[in-house]
Amino acid sequence: MCNPDQLYQFVNFGENSNIYNMRYKLIKEEETKQEVFQKGRIDAFSEIENEIKSLIKPLRQAKIETIKTYREQPESFATVTPTDLIKDYLKDIKTLLEK
Image (cartoon, rainbow, N blue to C red; front, side, top):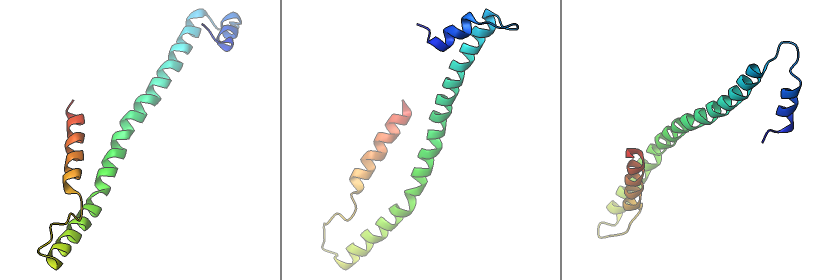
């Protein structure tokens, strides 16, 4: 069903308007919504890339902390950073991207 604004525009053509221009305007508005949606989805990839890049420093720091802990306590089996969990998450992300 048409909303009242579209109906009003349809009834009151004006001098230089016709039904084809009105249809073009409605289609153009829909394309604009699609363009905005698609641009947002594409921009999300840049955000994801930036998030992944921001993980490098904490990952290196966790590695250094783990090395430090194991040097101080060579008999330890403690998990300083949950590397298995991180690897599982990365594997899941790769699986999502392969589909």
